[in-house]
Length: 260
Image (cartoon, rainbow, N blue to C red):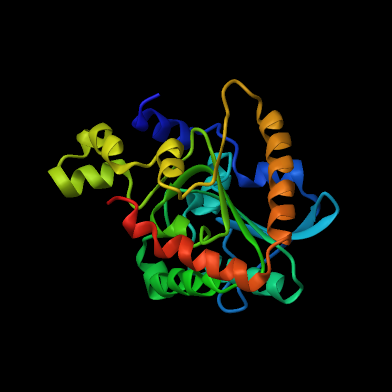
């Protein structure tokens, strides 16, 4: 598959989202709502549950499955209250020493005027700032399209797992092509240059593990993901929190040098 073919796969209407994997691998999941500031954002689902009998906080981007649900969830493009809800749950996880697992799959944050009026940029920046120093392990799973700062706001982590046909990029191929060549039809060329595939991200040291999809069913992938997440948490358990935070800082500090 070409890079742009993987973009199309990540965007596929029938591709399973983070909420599907929550249902498959998290026991007794209880969803929590609201940011205690403005309202509740359906584009981000968050709550608490158990992974192999271990309490965890889980946060997922969700675009919905039916047209009605997608409109309700704003097609998976979170608003500021969604990011504030996510941060509220992460701070709660830190207080009770629960690991945080984030599922990323969104074309980006909602860019409408109402989101800007409620502080979209500030909400994303606050998440980045707080997650960088959150005193509990953070695991991010990129299940589909990880787009722009809207995805990054749930991606500051200690370990990143990417699905084989997922993508992760600062800008969409169409947006990049429009900026560079004033021609969105050159999106395929832009996708090749952006380095947005799971193989690219693993080569650059941004993604730690690529979960192969192949011809596996979503249920099979979920079983593998559950084992991988449980094993990763056991790994982070052996690391002192001060060491984990220092490594998290260096993880992002060095990204700018990866292209040299």
